[in-house]
Length: 330
Image (cartoon, rainbow, N blue to C red):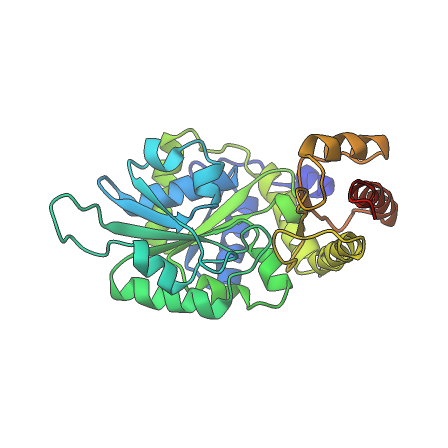
C-alpha cells in the first residue's frame, strides 16, 4: 500500500482529472455490476451522501435495522444532513431483518396527511458479523421496487459476506440502487470508501460530496492503497483466513462454557460477558494484564491477528470463566 501511494498520480479529483481515482471508481463499478462509482473519505460520508442524494428533500422516512450504523454511529446525519425521519426496525429472529419485519413498520404511501411515507430502505450486510441471506435481500428488494422505495446498502463489510460464500458481489449489489463499500475496516486500507450506483446518482452525489467538504485534490494517495486492499485482501482470499480465526476464538470461548450474543458467520465474535459473570471493565482490565488491548465484548478479527494473540486471549477466557465456576461453587 505504501508503494501504491508513492506511485499514485496526483491530479485533482474535484474536476475528475486523476487517473488513479478514475481507474478505481470504474473498476469497483465493474466488480459490483453498477454504472459508476465515487470515492469518499469514509463509510459514514458514503452512507450520508447516498441517502441525501436519493431523498433530495424532506419530508421522507428512512427505514433500517435498529442497530444500523446510520442510526448508532453517524452522529444523527440522516436527520441533520438529509432532513429525514428514521424508522428503526428490530429483527424478529434476533439476527437480521426479513421482509415481514419491514412490512410491519414501513409506510408505503400516503394514507393520511399526518403520514411520512418511506422513500428509502437502508440495509446493512453483514450487520454485527451476521449475514442477511441473499434470498432475503432479493425478497425485500422486489417488494421495495413494487412500492417505488429506493434501496441503499451500507456494504462497508459486504466483502466479508461474499468471502463467506453467501453470494457474489454482483448478486448482492443487484438488489440495491446504491452501495457504500469500505476500503479500511477488514480490507486494511488507511482511508476511504466508495459508493456505486447509476451515472445520474453518481453526478448528484459528487455535488453533495462537494457541499459537505468531501471534494478531494490529490486523491490518488487514497485510491492507490484502496485498490491494493481489494486486490490483495478481498480477491486474494485473506478475509477467509480471518473467518477461520474468528470461529477458532468462538470455539475456545464456548469450550470453557461461554455464550455468544450472535452466531459467528464472518470475522466478528460477540462475547456474552453477562453470562460469563464479568463486567466490560473487568474484561478490558484483565485483557491488559495479559497484553491484549480490548474495547468491548465485540472481537473483530483481522487476518494479521497472530496465534500468540489467540493464546493470550484463551488465558484471559480461562481465568474469567474459572472465576464464574468458583462463584457458583463448582
